[in-house]
Each structure stands twice: as structure tokens, then as C-alpha cells.
Image 1 (cartoon, rainbow, N blue to C red):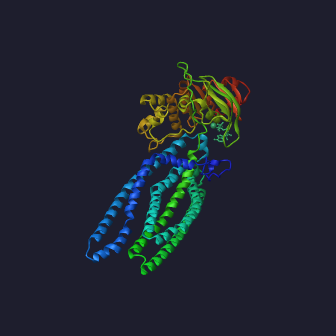
Image 2: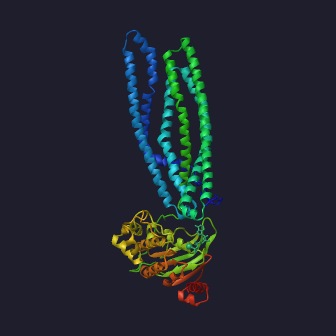
Image 3: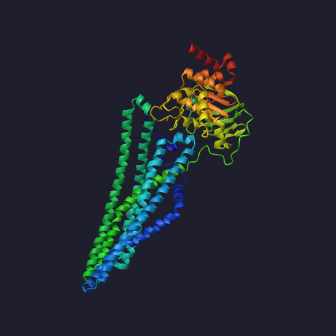
Length: 604
Ligand SMILES: Nc1ncnc2c1ncn2[C@@H]1O[C@H](COP(=O)(O)OP(=O)(O)OP(=O)(O)O)[C@@H](O)[C@H]1O
Ligand SMILES: [Mg+2]
């Protein structure tokens, strides 16, 4: 269970998937577009809030230069006005702040809700070959850490940025208005700050991308190990896994340290600039107060404003932090969302022709099919096959011969590289997903059960089925007996204690699910491999009922399964090497006769 080493021919081993230029910006625009009105509202609230908040030092200047001298002459009005004004501004700014936080929180919640939904829907719609290459750990990382870093940006960072920018503008304007010279010095200090920020952004951007790649690697390793916990135990891989995980963890920690270091450099640099500017202004201002060209109150207000001006610069660094990691995350999410299904829905779906009478089966044709997996050589070199409606064919052949590949092409998990797969003469690529799922159902070895009850799991075959129909399907297939012994029968939760069911029982549930779906074409790929001999016998007896009138492809290594078939195909290296009735082939001298003989001997 070592981490899969990135292979150069698999672009999906990278976190940032290839995506068209501008995909990230387009994603951001589409997320924010529905928020336009509320964005205007929040900005307005913030504008007003800042106006109220920044009035304080101005009132102080007025108090020192006007109200105090008036007070000395027994005029109390100005001082009372200042006091009341200060209080009102504080109240107003507080109230507006609450309103702003509430509306902006709602905006960010909606954006995140939208984004999480999009990631889930899109990942679910992507084709099997995508999921085979892009590990589930990476998907989890996209929808957790990456969405989370965007949340940080939207909920704290963005508000921070807008507040800082607004207060910069307000304060600069006020300083310039109070005193042109002092204001100009403050504004001039923005130039080195600007370059400092640019530098930080460039360097931190690199560090943040490395950091989020490192955290994704940690998650991928974690998910892979826990998914494979049984082989991990069986092969005593714990120590090796611990070492590999510790290495990934350390790599993550290193990138974390790098980002903190960048942050520290930035904070030190920005404080240096700020303190130099403040010192300059105070010295020059004091000199001018002494020489009478500046009022004391104005200098006091200017110093108060300078504090407010430079204080948020550290926080601006924080914001740039969250901006950088959010940008890195958004880029990855955009790359994921830009992937198109390799097995797309048709633009103009075609219907299957109405099936003939009580006979649900449909004809299957492989017409000059060639197929290669994305990550391997050609598996089916050139494949032609016609199955008349209602026929049951058994497909046998050595491991790796291409049997499952044939099944997956028929279920349209993949599209052929060349040629066509037809159902009653209609190319599978022209059928809508819904029509295709009604037409073809595949039951495989890994009978997967979803969380929920046994009945829910069977009903996946046909969600509108009644309880009677569900039970009938279970009875036909021979699953009813074991389901009745479960603590809550059909209502037993398959993930809860007592509801744990064996591999063979899972296969029976999967069979019942397929039977309920009532497809025209049923594919069974090693679907009885986990059943014991009596269990398999029972399913076989049921098969004669289940398969009646349907087209069926039965793949099995146990040749007992073949007895129910009308026809046997023997596959080797992606080709059909024998094709005939079971009895004919057994009587002959080909591979199937040999296989059958070996099997008979093994039973004896
Ligand atoms: N997802 C995949 N990506 C790349 N190559 C694959 C993939 N699945 C199967 N192959 C390759 O395709 C070939 C045929 O595999 P397939 O699963 O169709 O064999 P099979 O006849 O079903 O074998 P088995 O009896 O073991 O189930 C094998 O060489 C295998 O390595
Ligand atoms: Mg197989």
C-alpha cells in the first residue's frame, strides 16, 4: 500500500488538472453573478459604516482646537456636540457593522453551497475512466480543504480587504484634507508598501500552491489506506504506511513553515515602512506645531489616523494569505469542473424502438469495435458480435482476456475507441442515460450496498417499486430467507450493527436490485462468485425465470453457470476464439472442451 507514484502519462496524478485558460476567472464570475444585488448592498453598508467609524479622530481634532478653547470661555455647546457626535458615530458604525456582517455572511454561504453542489454533481457525472485515474482522496480534498480555503477568503478575507481598502481611501482623503503636506507623506508611503505586497504575493503564491498540494497528498494517502484497511492488516503494512504517511505529513509541515516565514518577512517589512512614515510625520508635524504653522489638534488627529492607517497592514498580509490559498484552491476546483465526461449524454437522444410484446429482450451488436483503456494498450483489437434478442450467452476465458471490458462497453461505462455498440440497432451513444439504464443493467462481483435499509438497496433498481414488488424480487432470487432473519427484516440498516451482511448475501441483494430494474439486457460479471454452491444453485434455478425473454451476458469462471446458457463464447486476448452451443463445444476438441474437462475433473 505505498502511495501510487505519479506516472508521466497520467495528467490526473497532478492536483491541478489541465483546464482551458480563464477557467478559474469564469468559475468565480459564475459563482458571484447571482449575488450582484446583495454585493451592492453589502458594499453600501460598508461605505456608510466606514464613514461613521473614521469620524472619530476628526472630532478629536475639533475638540482640541475648537471645543476646548470655547469651554475655557464658558461655552459648553461645542464640547457637548463633540461628545454626542462621537457617541452617535460609534452607535451607527456598530449597527452598520452588524448589518454588513449578516448580509455578507449570507452571500458567502450561498456561494459555498453552490460550489459544493457543483463539485458533487460534476464529479458524479464524470465518466468511470476519470474516476479510475483521479483518486477519491483528491476529490475529497477538492470538496473539503479547497472549499474551506475559499470559505475563509469569503467570510474573513474579503471583508478584511474591502474594509482595509476603504479605510485607506477614507483616511488618505481625510489626511490630505486636514493637511496637504502630512497627507502627501502618508500617501507616498503606499509606494514601497505596494511593492512589498506584490513581492509577497508572488512568493507566497508559490508556497501556497505547494502547501495545498502537500495537504492533498496527505488526504489521498489517508483515504487510500483506510479504504484498503483489510489488505493493510493482512499484509502487516502498518509500519510501512506509518513511515510513508509521516513523510507526507512532514512535507506538509515544511510547506506550512515556508508560508509562515513568508508571512513573517512581510510583516517585518511592512512595519518598517509604516514606522518610518509615522516617525517622519510626527517629527515634521511637531516642528510645524512649534513653529505655529500647524494646529495641535490636527497633528493629534493625523497621528490617530496614521495608527488606523497602518494597523490593518498586518491583517492585509493575512488576507493575502487566504487570498493566495483560495486562488490556488479555486484553480484546482476549476480544473475539476472543466473536465468533460468522456462518455457524454447525446445532444439529441434517440428512443429505443418499442419492444415486441411480452418479450423484453433486445438485440445486441458489437460492430467493428476496438477498444483501449486510456492508460494501457488495446484490449479489444477488433470485435464483432451479434446477440439476438432473448439469448443467454456465457462468456468464458482466461483472466485478463477482456470479458469484463466487453461487459463494460455494453453497459456504456466506456465508449469504444472505434466502431459501435448497438442495442436494437441504436448506437448506445445516442441513447439518453435514463433509456440506457432501463435497457442495460450490470451486476458485478463487488455488490456495493449504499447506506440505508435492505429494502432501499433493492429499490435502487426501481425507486417507485412497492414493498410487495421488492419482496417478490428477493423471493425469486432466494434472498428472502436471509433477509427475514435480519434484526429488522427488510428495514434493517445495512451499515448498522446487526445489519452487516456477508459478501454472498450482498450479491443476492444486488441480484434482487437488478431483477427489480427489469432491464432488456442483463449482464452478470462474476455475479455469483461469492455464493456458496447451494446459493449459486439457487440463483441458477431462479435464473431460468429471471432471464426468460431477456438478453443476458453471463461471465463466470465456474462453469456450472454455463449450463443455463444458450450459447458459449470463449475469449482469448480480446477475441472470440470459440462460439457455439454448450453441448457442441463440449463435444468438440477446442478450448472449451478442455476447460470443461478440467472442471469436471476438479469436481470428481
Ligand atoms: N480500468 C482499466 N484500465 C486499464 N487497463 C485495464 C482496465 N481494466 C482492465 N484493463 C486491462 O484490460 C485487459 C482485460 O481486462 P478485463 O477486466 O476485461 O479481463 P477479464 O477477462 O474480465 O479478466 P478476469 O477474468 O480476471 O475478470 C487486462 O489486460 C487488464 O489489464
Ligand atoms: Mg473480469
